[in-house]
Length: 246
Image (cartoon, rainbow, N blue to C red; front, side, top):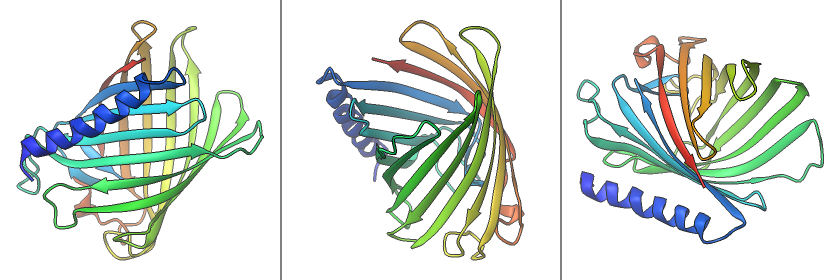
């Protein structure tokens, strides 16, 4: 697919999501973009150069949420991906589960991954996300994904987050996560603990509608038989994000 066509596809999907958000007073929308030094996903380096990752979120008051996200490669990656091109476009639909609990929040969703120009054009995952609010400013999470299309296997991630207030409007968010992957989803064809990630981020409100964020991440493999060293060209990456909510 030519770059102009990919841009048109992303713009069309984004336009539909924005329209659904602004056409109803019961919905909220956020448009943004992250400008990152690399694209790393589940420990794998997809691009160790500069990328732009635009996104649009629309959430209805019922909790139903739609998201479109893309990775745009500004730099190439050793010939593996082309620069000035979309490498990936994802569409996600999610909905919160009515647990009626102050301790646990849960949601389910489906993600469609599209890879323009790649040998595998697309795949899809269903997921369950759990968030445990046990201590103030500390959160625990468990996310389980199952690829029911091309891969037919699972990936699970456990995480912990700590928010450190700086002022009334600012806080530094620290996070750590670890992933476990099934053998068919693993790049090496082995199941086991895949990767861990440490992160630090801060979000600065410019006004009631605009927010600017900065983040830095460190990622490494847990078991090199599951996630080989050669699949991890990047261990430290980060960037800034700009978001507008309406």
